[in-house]
Structures are given as C-alpha cells and as structure tokens.
Length: 157
Image 1: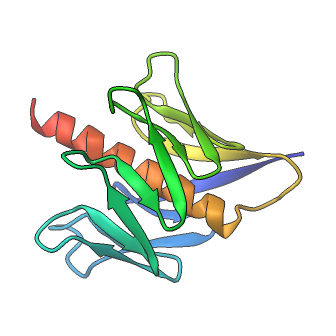
Image 2: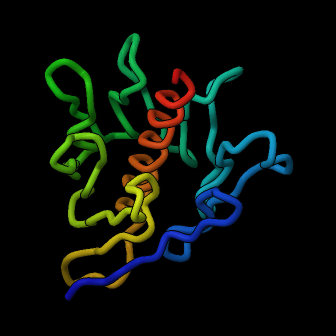
C-alpha cells in the first residue's frame, strides 16, 4: 500500500509536510529560514544559516563542506568526492537521472512540480500510512539542504 503525502506551500515557503508544520520567524519576508519542524525547534550556527540541531538532535558537518557527517546518532555518507549526500543513517538517497535532485529518501519517493524545482508531494511506499518521526526528520533535512544548495547556486548566477 502506498500513501501520498502533500507538501504545502504558502508565499513560496514550505509550510507543511503531511501534517507537520514548518514555521518561520516573524519577519519571514526578510528571512525565509525555517525555525521549527512540528514541535522541534531548529537551531542554526550563530551568524549563519548552517543548521546545527533539530530539537535535541545535533548535526555535525564535514570540514570545509556543507554536507553533514552525523545527524544525532546517525552517520551520513557522501559520494567519493563529497559532491552529494548518499545516505542519512538508515535511509539511502536516490537521485534523478541527472543527479541534480533527490528522487527518494529510503521508502519515500519525491515528486516535483512541472519545472522540476519544487517538491510538491511525496509517496510513502510500504504498509505505513504516515511518516515516522525519523523519516520526517530525514526528509525535511534532505529538502532543506537541497534548497540551500539550489539557492546558493542561483545566487552565484
């Protein structure tokens, strides 16, 4: 049994992942950095946009890289030259044929809008009818880091 889970947007910002709210600060028109995922506060590096923790789950990064080394007790695996993330803990990441977008996080398939730039829904394969907390965390992190990478790429153009 497969379950489709909607990703809700408002004013261009991701607001909800299957019932889990993504909230922003009071001045979201100036700062589009998420501040919470459901009940979990998002903590960032001082004077930066590097995500350091989700709730009490600490995130560490590779030296000189924006790719994570660990998320809590999970280890993360990157490609040989560190160009992209391959795994977060138990969840393998699958990329589209061009290698530019994540198309799946473990049992969750990601669908994009017609332009291919914004994820619009996910499909959970298997018996579960909702995302577990662990899978929600992994999916959010992948979408968050992917958007950061795209924003940085587009800012350089």
